[in-house]
Image (cartoon, rainbow, N blue to C red; front, side, top):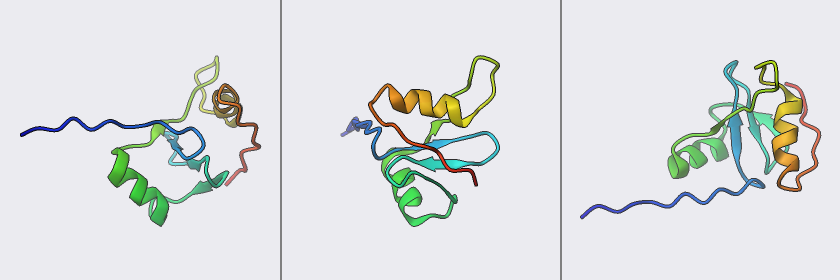
Length: 81
């Protein structure tokens, strides 16, 4: 028997990962490490983090991620690592 899993996206409790290895947690509004307990649990439940968005020039910037989060009504300042 095969089951299809349904992944429910919750922008208030999600992770985004950049190509340079930064991992942002919207639940904690901070950059976390790949071995972070909550991030590891998230990966086990969801399989992968969402790629960090890119701006118009193709760069993965804090502003690009902030723009995505604002579409969900999440107004945050993403701290730098």
